[in-house]
Image (cartoon, rainbow, N blue to C red):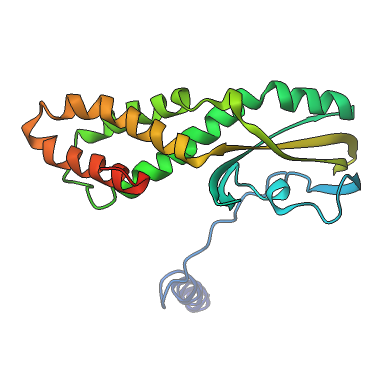
Length: 220
């Protein structure tokens, strides 16, 4: 009886060792908790003013550059949505000053980033001056005189899960002489450059920005 109990105990020990520590342990991967997924949004254009829609109306870029009649232009796009087409147009027109100012700010940030590329780690301290210059550019550009360069609307049905709605998306396009934007860039930076010149460590790098903006505008 004792011999049988000993053999049974030994067998249990062997099984335990084999299952818990006898070989390589395979890590147990924790299960990723499965939470609710957001329903997919589907948009269908029921009607539109132009087919196909112009590229400037469907892409995500709120500013672009182009040339017409020998003049370089800065194009700015604004848009709004509403269940009523005329209201959507009025909203877009009413928001154009603010939206164009934001687009100009984005472009100014982009242009200053190109000029200061390579100064990272060397021009510490210029960031504040550039930030102030960017803010000034959007104020200096006279968007009130922007010329109409196109409009587009589309009637959209948007479905999200079991919910569905329809609305008009109205897009307006305006253009500004690119030279006026460049002048605003120069004026905004010149105001900051006067401050930069008082800092011996930043004076040379500030001049690099001044020279680059003047060269881009074709002035000395």
